[in-house]
Length: 110
Length: 110
Image (cartoon, rainbow over all chains, first blue to last red; front, side, top):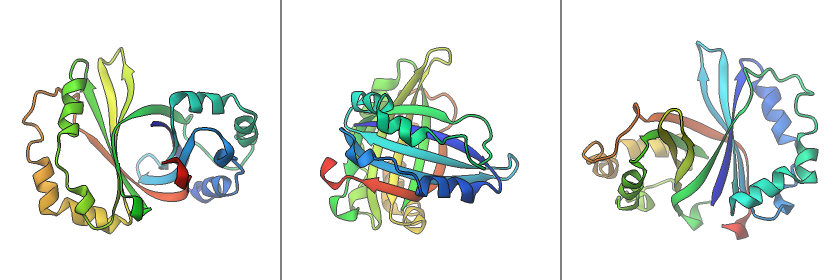
């Protein structure tokens, strides 16, 4: 299992616009080979820094599935409007990729 | 859905001992109310910094389920040997907590 995590610092006041952007986005991830799960997560607000931390997690069967997706038409379509919106970011998104070492999922809890 | 993410910087050479620690740990998470999923993830190696980044993700139905777990006997049991091992950490683990904003899970992909 492979997880691509992107971290976003969103300036205070831009949170709603940022969430709306993701809620309305057509990602077509469900049709992409190797796709397992997507989550957009709202993290802690940094009062001194003036931002709220968000993380997107995209889970794939393998790293190759993720890399194939980043080269696909679906990926370009999903990202073509990035930047063309009113969301104010603090710096660039920070991508980190992970391989699962150990995992437990309660099948009846999802 | 609520996610508690802990980030660990593990000094180069300690990775195997760190993973073994987690693989052999009796967490009893499966018996804990509100538990959904646990993952230990291996992230990128930082060659200049001399460490490998790891993240543990624990998913709960609600924040209250997570808070109850941190006060439970199971939590104390699972953490009683933290520190008593040969793993070399760079700094303290960094805890971040997140609420799900949007999610998609392919039920047949897990």
